[in-house]
Length: 97
Image (tube, rainbow, N blue to C red; front, top):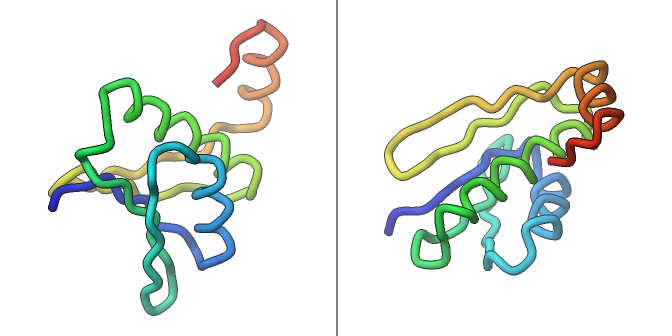
């Protein structure tokens, strides 16, 4: 089955991301050295994909992680954490992720 998968540094980080993604029915699997949060495609709309990306970006900043690997089907992408100064200026301008 195809899915969206987000690699995390461990189980605790994965569970934090799962809480942030409530309503999307994410699953967690542990692997040697990391964990993955997986959201099956049958639960995902195009708006949900945007939500997963924005939620993961906020999670990266909150956890002070530099990046996360996101797998969309058979493709893999690296999402970089937003720099603090850019995040603050966006918040000051009224943009919310």
